Length: 167
Image 1 (cartoon, rainbow, N blue to C red):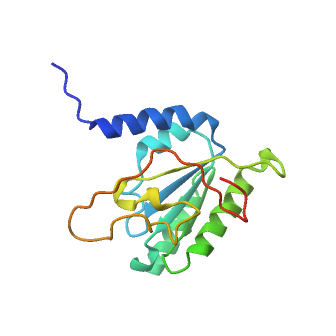
Image 2: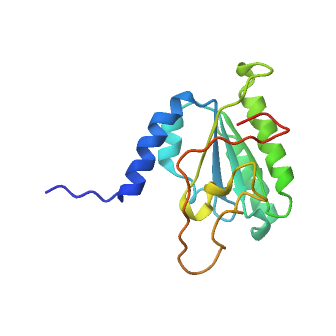
Image 3: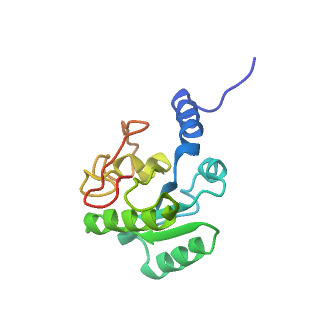
């Protein structure tokens, strides 16, 4: 008897990531600004290969600003990585920054062409809320608390970050 430690929904999500990754121009990895390395999923790093990535450090308003700046500097030292800190207080700035970085990292697409980006992150970071229709990266998600939360999210959606390029 073989044991499978990955729950079924995680296995399904992994299959979908594997299928979607080749068609994407940019990966947007949503990290918890309080513990960026611990909230990074090594599977996403492995699957993206040399594909450019934007690492969004959410909840940075709950983290030490000096430490957050050090993390952004460290992350941007990795190949093909752009990083920035995000808060829930200025969602329009976050959407604008993601759109700018996506366009810059996918400049091979040329002007007038949509950038294809995949948004990924571990569950407690709530990447599901990172779409252009939300007030913030966490707007569709359960509140941050000391207890467990359940978040229902679609595996793949198309987002229009208007008036910025479509991701």
